[in-house]
Length: 420
Image 1 (cartoon, rainbow, N blue to C red):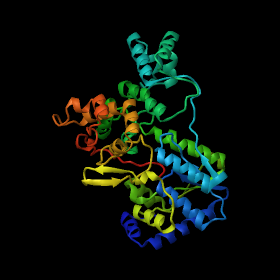
Image 2 (image 1 turned 90 degrees about the vertical axis):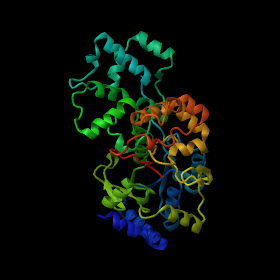
Image 3 (image 1 turned 30 degrees about the vertical axis):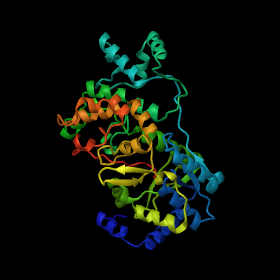
């Protein structure tokens, strides 16, 4: 199936009744393809709630697992709602993902940098580098540290202990913050590996757009690995345990250019493979692809569907000059839309100041300051306004208009949560 963006726009303008019938048709078609178990990806957000309700209402005799993707950085309203609804609607069919744990002691990024600097000073950095200048592995670097260094790191609490949850906090320390969209995070490696790549690798691209990207990456520690670590991997692991070969998602083409492109080229249902299925196919199904937010709310009103109280929380939209309600669910620590007006973090600062403060204090404020300085035009943002401690303590809006000070023309920065 191929649909142009114009074709999609035509579908999106069609009546709600048509979209509803289309969703029924797509779900039924997907069921006919499945020979194992089925599941709906659930986040506690309005879109996945509506999708789950639609499947339960129209196909009540078909058992469908509900997989709640608990990233560990859920809004408290969404977490509470998801678990309550899971108990009421899902019973034994409601399942919650679990984060993996580390299998050995590992150094925090600050300690890894100290080990690398020590090796450079001793003239031994080649011990941990490949022939092309890339780091052999993070483990190789950590093994190079002496026992005295490890003891010192433990005293300074710079060690992630064996069995540590691979949480948001572990992930952003090891890889970087989700500050810019997936298209901007081209290197999916631990930050210390990227440091070595940028400093020593002989395979750095000479393309101008990548050189610009590398220059930003030198100063700003960002990554999209948390999406894989907190969402994709735990969900796929649980899908394998449940022998799932069909996953329903409440994704809509209207949400982002990337999702519109995916729907254009893949259609409502597309096929992939999973190890637990052997030669049998795995199917992805997005029945709400041509829906919009208005359609979702129309469905909620029409069928009296419960939804998270998160969507009733208001913030002040300085662009529109009025109060608005939260429109999107997702991880509260996500800043992939930081270069847009009313970005995720600027709203979090108003609606959940405690959570905003925890993310900023853990290091996001430092990285946003570094990003701003990469694209600063001189006098508009002074050092005082961008100082992380000043921003956190006084809750200023220095980071609310990052798009005005960072040149994003060469890269795509887009808030694109896995589940909605």
